[in-house]
Image (cartoon, rainbow, N blue to C red; front, side, top):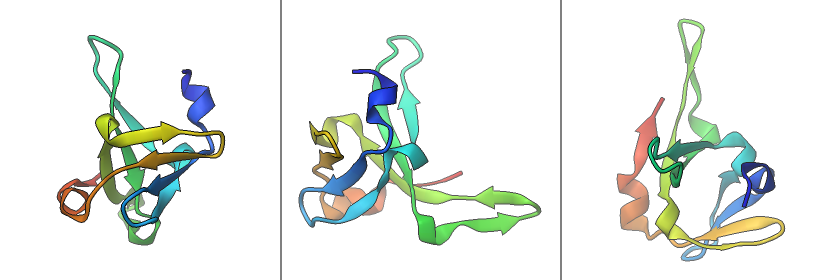
Length: 91
């Protein structure tokens, strides 16, 4: 699968049906040696803060192992509430 094929897909959590974002708005964590994707970083749209002209974003880190299905329009992940709350990041 190519990175361009992931673009525009919505990310949905299998456990609660929550819509987490769209892959076009997300960043990827990639292992530099193997080139494999380790995680998706999905920004929380409600938490953008502008400080000194820079946007500070926070969101959720989704391990690649949590992805259950990549369909035509969406990516289904399985992330329970405990893991979801522990995987917050700030950029």
